[in-house]
Image 1 (cartoon, helix red, strand yellow):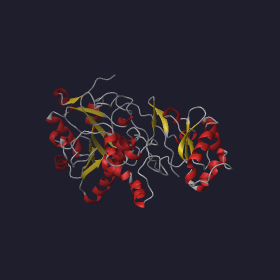
Image 2 (image 1 turned 30 degrees about the horizontal axis):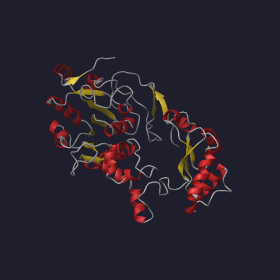
Image 3 (image 1 turned 45 degrees about the vertical axis):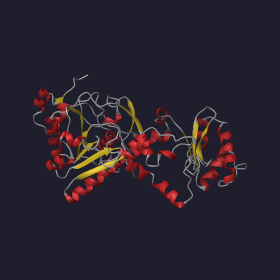
Image 4 (image 1 turned 30 degrees about the vertical axis):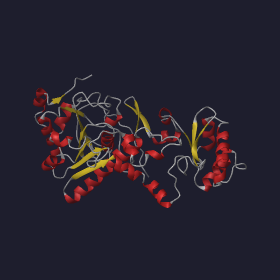
Length: 400
């Protein structure tokens, strides 16, 4: 049986290492702050119990930061002036006793700052050096700027997204940054940590969003190889081409998701929807338009909540489409405490769950870059912290 996660009230206080509650307790991670997938990867590691120290530029990062920024939760924020060579020495001192370093800069930048893989491995040969980029460490576009939709565009993934034939629809930055990016970075880091326990040697993990997204899309490659897949939106089984795997509007302007793929689930779906005697056969392809119109008209007869009462807990594979602000109160989400309110913010609990080393939420996001500089560097064994502060190599922001 999986143990249910519980909240902890972690009051502000001295920073102590080795207090994580998940299976990565005792693992030490140095994060060179960036945006998007790098921070998300480090949030996962921190959620699972690792000691992560987030090294930021004074003043913080563009598009990130603040006490609401959940991608920075679970770890202290240290501000270092990375343009000062002395800051590189601080990072190398942190690396000397760390298991992992994560950076998300363009290829070559870490080397120019004096914290590239070679110098880090010279200080700590067992270090796992995680690199998060969009295009990867090499290739003709490796030095070009880009964002989530650019990366997933060239992998063949974005083309098929959405149920609008006229143009693709991008799902915010979930597929690239977090699906093909941070998730694969964490997989790579954990795999390299396991290998390092055997070999005693670290290595570089080159996590590129193009690589991970292409890997996520393996099923599409299989469909293409099978010869029954059209590279055209809303034309296939899982992209809205089938009326029994689609989204329908209800009487109140809300929507329901329908995923009644298997025949037994489809049978229950049409019965509960009240169209059992009038619906075409599930795979009568020439009557798909007729089926879609029938389903759409029926859903428009009741509100979303009324349909929820009909389908709740059944095998019809129907679920309401909720806003994030509504999801926290859904009975299933509430029972599992998937989303909870902590530190005044509704947020997801750590995932996945563990039967023995259950993970719990840790410290809240730092209100400002450098909010924990003095305490965090001291806890990590840096000896000349006050001197670093006086020289401007490190910055401690004033308490709010």
